[in-house]
Image 1 (cartoon, rainbow, N blue to C red):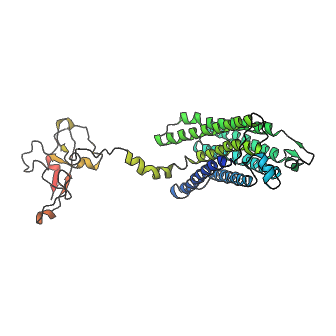
Image 2: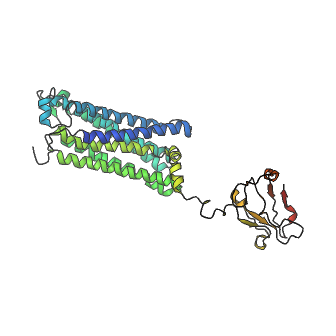
Length: 388
């Protein structure tokens, strides 16, 4: 073994499988919420971005299945143990490597296309983004197709990849891994950067800004995963212990795929996420109608006919709570009722306590109606009526 090799007596497959299973579960939940939102909340037809997300998720699960099969044939154990203890030794393991490569070359482009399809739907009015999306989709599809062809036909004949007794011409696997990873990083960077111009040109509310910010954060994570994949392949490219060293690169690859799928589903899931998080967010916000002063809600005094309110100015009462409280007449000698403090409305007194008085008077319901006319002269007090 050389200095760049990783070697362990135990099976390290859990390092790859556990994170991938968790991220795959989260991605599946988000795709499910996206479809539920479209079908039952927004009641809109499925479009290309929904189908692309479904295809990317299925391809990701193909990668997960391929990893499980590879582990069954020794993926995660050191290559010496694989050759000694597993049937057909390294030969079956190399077949699984081809399966992992082909499924990754299918899932990675689809996950990027899912993000681009989401961009296309949100920013459909932008000519720049539409053209940019089509160009990137074309390049990514071409890159994915080329990777699939090279993965399958990396050796001529194909069986020469896993059967070393067959004379065959094969490409350098190390260069191949590096060669497909560099364009992958470039595509991820372009995908994250594509909507920046449109986002800065839009006036969005806070919820949309948070959604877009989260997408960019996930997009940055995808770029970091792609870069780490390249770094890991460069570190272990001279290693002969491929049954263990490839684990680290595959971990970065599957993380990249799942994060892209989750990021593509976040904005469409906004309606259901707001419903789910509303109790949490609502409970964390201070209640403007509550406080130490319990009388503030019921004992506010509203003065009618005050000099500054006369003329053409109009006061608009926005909430029902502003109508609660006491009203007083100003300079009105015709009325025997100077204030409404002694009147109960709907069985509550002025401080919000239930009227517990017994007797026939406890059954009296008082309806208070207020009519206000704003003119240049004093407000006629005849328009103020009180019904019992």
